[in-house]
Length: 153
Image (cartoon, rainbow, N blue to C red):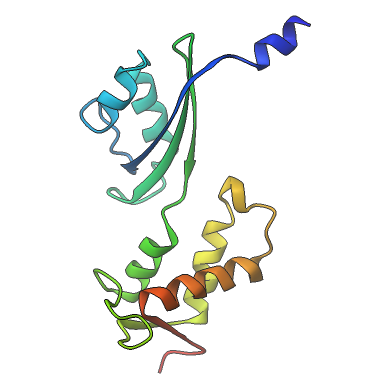
């Protein structure tokens, strides 16, 4: 019975942040967000930076931190957003202001497939097949005004 109680620790808060890969520091936005729940800032920064070292610096990483009432925490790191990957692959700073009317850029299906392979490593997408993830990415690209073509000329 005591093992079951250990699994269900009382949660103080769920904190969602976007932190650059390898760039977690006790300064804002990380410091104030974790400090108010009396969590160990340096432990989070060290763990986060170690988990995100394979990404290029300044890559925006979504992180979900579960803070428990006993001042401990757990966190999961997600890969960058699909929109960020699309903008990087297309070489644009932002999507089209008038998606469907004005095309911001074009991408090949191969780019979409590569982004889908990276996104499939996310915990919430592991059970989705690659084709479904590709369809979602193509939908996001269309809404950003990025045209997906079979092959780039």
